[in-house]
Length: 316
Length: 261
Image 1 (tube, rainbow over the protein chains, first blue to last red):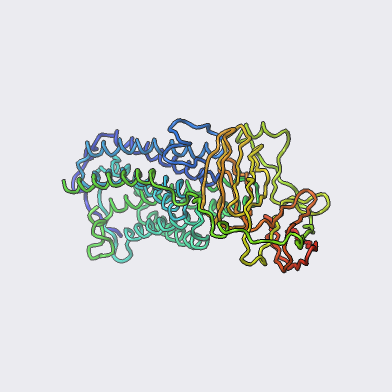
Image 2 (cartoon, each protein chain N blue to C red):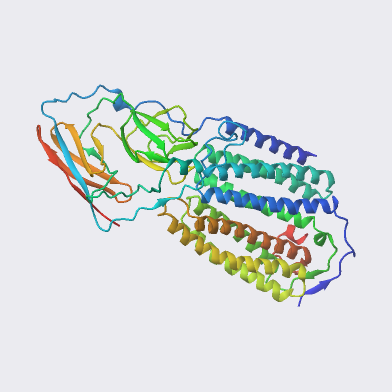
C-alpha cells in the first residue's frame, strides 16, 4: 500500500490573483474549445480557402457576407482573434499577480503560442493549405488548449490546498504511466491531424488509437484501483474514461462517414458533425488525462528509490 | 530579468514573422512567362493534306442517378436556379453517351509548335455552378473567368505543373484573365465558398482537343497525316487511350467506351 505523508502545512495557500484568474482561465479554456470546434468546422466543410487573403478578409477588416464557406472561415478568424485578445489579458494578469516564476513563464508561453498559431493560420491560407503547416496548426491549437487547461489547474483552489502526499509503491510508477499516456496522446493528436490534412494515411492514427486506448485504460484503472477514495483523482479519471469510450465510438464513425461523403457533391452534415465531434472530444480527452496527470504529480511522490519519474516531476 | 528579455525578444520575432508572412510574396503566384514551345514560331502545316479524327464516347452499365446539390447555405445560389441542380461528374446522355469527356491528341505531334488562339476561352460562374464543367485550352491561351452570380465566389485551380492560385470574385465582378503556360491534364478547379462547385481544365500544347456535349460526340480537325495517340478523360471513369493513324485528307473514327462503376 502507498505510504502516506502528512502535508507540510494545513489549509489553503491564497490564490494568486484571487479566484478571478482561475475563473478567467476556465472561461478561456471554454473559448479555446469553441475555437477548436470552429477550426474543425472549417476543415470538415472544406472552407479553408474560401477567404483567399490573410490577415484581411477580401482585402478588408470589415465583416464580409457570412455565406457558404466564408461563414466558417471568417467565423473561425473572429473567434481566434477573440481568443488572442483574451490571451493577452491572461498574460498581463499572470505577470501582474503571479509570484510563481514558472507560472509567469507559462503565461508568456501562452502568448507566444497564440501568436505563432495565428501565423500558422495565415500560412495555411496564403500557401494553399500545405499539409505539414495545416497539421502543425491543428496540433498547436490542441497544445494551446492543453496549456490553458493546465494553467486553470495550477490556479485552482484544489491545487493550492495543502494536501497529503502518497508515496508510490515500489516498482511500477503511476507518475511515469501518466506522463507516458499524455505523450502518447500528443503523438496520436499529431497522427490524427496529419491524416485529416492529407499528410499521412489512416494506418498510423489507427495504431495510435489502439495504443492510446490501452495506455489510457490502464492509467484509469490503476488510478481507480489505487486511489478510489481520492476524489481529487477519481473525478478526472472517470471523465477521461467516459470521453475515451465516446472517442472510440466517434473515430470509426467519422471514418465511415468521411468515406461515404467522398462520393457526395458536398460535405454531408452527418460527416461534418461527427468529424468535428471527434476533434472536440479528442481535445477534451487530452484535457481530462492531462488534469489527471497533473493531479497525480501533485499528490503523489515517487518511491524513494524510484528513478522512473523525471526530476522536475518529482518536485511538483 | 534576462529570461524576460528573451521572452520579449521571441514575442517581437514572432510578430515580425507574422508581418513578413502577410507581406511576403505568395509561393505560387502565377508567373506570366510563356513556355518555350509557345514562344517559338508555329510549325508549318500543309492545309491541303490535313485530316480529322471523329468519334463517340459511349457508356455501358447502369445509368447513375444524378445527385441533387443542396445550395441552402447560400440564398443567392438558390435564387439563381429555378429548379433542383444536379451534379455533373458523370452525365450520361439519352443516347447512352457521355457528356463532358475531354479528348485530345496526347502523343504523335513530336516537337511541332502551334499558334495560340487569340480568342480567350471562357469559364463562367453562373447559378453557382461552372459553365462549362469541363474546358480545354491551349498552353498560354487566355482564360477569361466570369462571375454572373449575385454572390462572391473564389476561383481556385489546383494544378501540379502550373502555379496554383486562389482569387475571390465579388458579384458581377470584372472578368478575370488568367493563363496556364504548361500543358497539364486535368486541372481541378473549385470554389471553397460553395464546395459543390467543381470544374476541370485540360491544358494541352496543340489545338487538337475537344469536349463532348449532349450527343457524346467529338471531332478533332486539321491534323497533319500521322500516327497519333488519342486520350479521352472522364472525371469519374478515368482516362482511355487509342492509337489512330490519319492519312492525308482522311477522317478516322475513334470510338471510346467507358464502363460504369
